[in-house]
Image 1 (cartoon, rainbow over the protein chains, first blue to last red):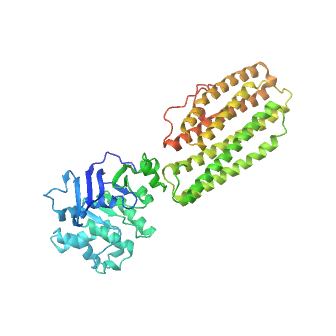
Image 2: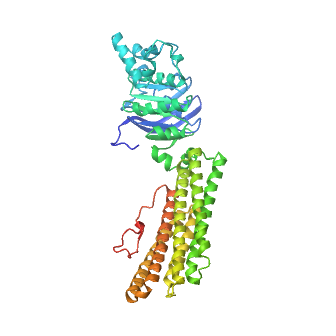
Image 3: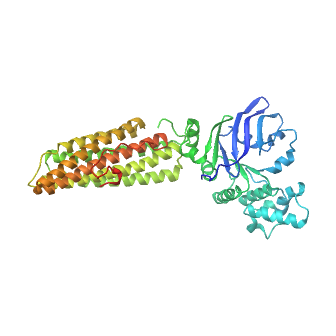
Length: 258
Length: 240
């Protein structure tokens, strides 16, 4: 899994703190995410990994009483600065959730929705092209090309999740965030998504939250272990899973009583 | 295993692997001790039993491999657990090999004991064998207690075995040149000495596995080597 050249840093987080009202969920996270790699965030429930993931596209903004301190820069640009258009940011930083959540619309409209509202196509042909290429990249085209007008919710769980991936990448993001994208899928559908992620990282930077140690080990190049709102250890995935340097990381990945 | 797994059956699996290594190690120690005693006592009686016992070692190693595969498949071990299982498989293979060397020593001892030129000057051999037995005993302790320092101590001591082997090799070679009638017996003694020297090497490889198990990497420095019998102090791990 070693990369040939030193990867470029895509996302740079410094001193990120998150408060939900009085409760502090993150205690000063420093984390670099490399471009065109999959970075896995692992850790026990409530450790802050999903909270951190949601900071990267400012999804926490919509939660009442949530306050974010510190800096997160994407390509060197502070995403919490006043000039940032949050809607545009969320197009650049797409998100795929735990449960597939296609709109109750046709497969075509699910994928075309983002490009339409962001004005990414000038004609029907262009939109057709975006839908087709997004579905192809998400590995779904062959399965749905003859029924694009069928409802997105008529697909199987694994297909729905790939539809959500197609929807996220239709607006040409730089970064795709995934919050336990396979936890509702069977092993075959999971394998298809994992294979897809390896393909997608050529074009996108992927940050994934997963509870499956095996999945983190299989798909990511870097892994960060979160515990009680801190990053305890961050490094090459191979290192984290064969020879972690921190006792807490070791205990967690080995399923030990910490 | 100081930390307990949430799934306690996993702890039991790892304990079982440790127990099997301890058992295999004990058997290898016994076989080596029995083989080296043959020449001292000039008694061929225990040879057949020793040869038969080697099959038990082989069977136990096979069983350990099967258990290790099961544990990997079922538990998906990570980090130290994974290294412990891989180390157990490799150490078991080395212990089985040590058993083979002991068996070979026994077979050659029979020829020497039954020969008319039955020679008594195997003091260096006894010294080498007792040194290697101590090393084996110590490295098995190092494994049982995950003590990398103790393992490295064994690693360093192999030098002395190599030196003894070199000196025996020279003596026996001189003897063969001087008295052709002792050539057959001396050749067997040479091979026995080589077998013991190889057991020393295998013991150091167990020490390396213990170090790897504890630290997640192999020891960085080259092991000091003093075996000059192969010509130009070549890598003794390649064997004779």
